Length: 329
Image 1 (tube, rainbow, N blue to C red):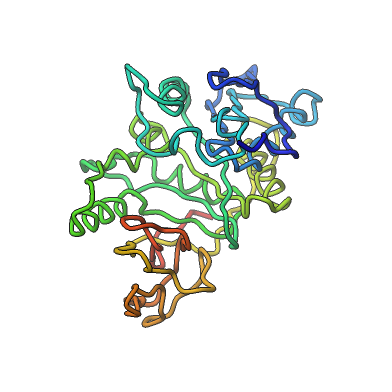
Image 2: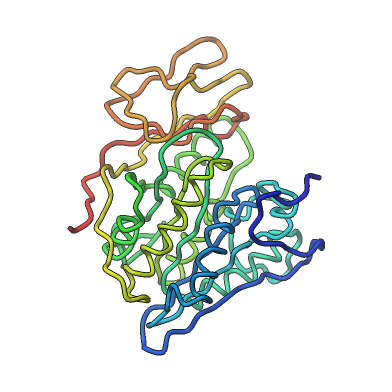
């Protein structure tokens, strides 16, 4: 296995059952409880690096937590981080719930992590991605009382996404996951449960709170650390935990995920050149089936998460359209 990242700003013990380490700052006045996570996926090191800088700022007095409290977990998946791999045994950001009898590494982490999520009111989960593309944020549904993802904090969550300093925000993840499940059933592939689409932010909404996933840029791009660092500072100001002017909303584009293109057979591939957030005109080729059949955009929209490594039953890409949801100025 590869060793933990050479540029790591945080170290973890060489033990598969290393504890989760958190650092918490308590303001002396009342305010919200914020949780900031890094390295939910172990090879996404911008989170630990950005969080380490913020912690240093807080300890040195360059940032003073005046209100509420903030808990930092620089490395949420120590085993995966030490291996410099996305997963320890499986994807921690899927199928997250409190298992009474954990089986694997992510089960053990999940049981502790879910308890930590329940203690907080707001979550910022810092990630990065493999390919090219602009940084973006994932947020959740509009307020609703439905069965899939009931929610009551849509305005606060969108405002959090807008304050981070990234130009794009995307919503519609769980609805699209249901479409992925249906597509797999049509192909007679093993059935997935809707709960397998649950990660940190979905669990926060389930628990009555809210949260945003920040995708800072490419894994190995030093600029992704700067994006994460600025976003954490912006969040502290936005929530009033520090004395700083709240940042203005920075969103240029809000995308609603509406479709998923699934890999149906070996040889199905995404069309070269696409990256998350690219504008896709109606009729443009997004992917090709193994027999050469083109999969085209059903209308003007955007491509999300194009994957060159998708296996049968996995998404080749997602498709979205311009969303009517906008943050307040």
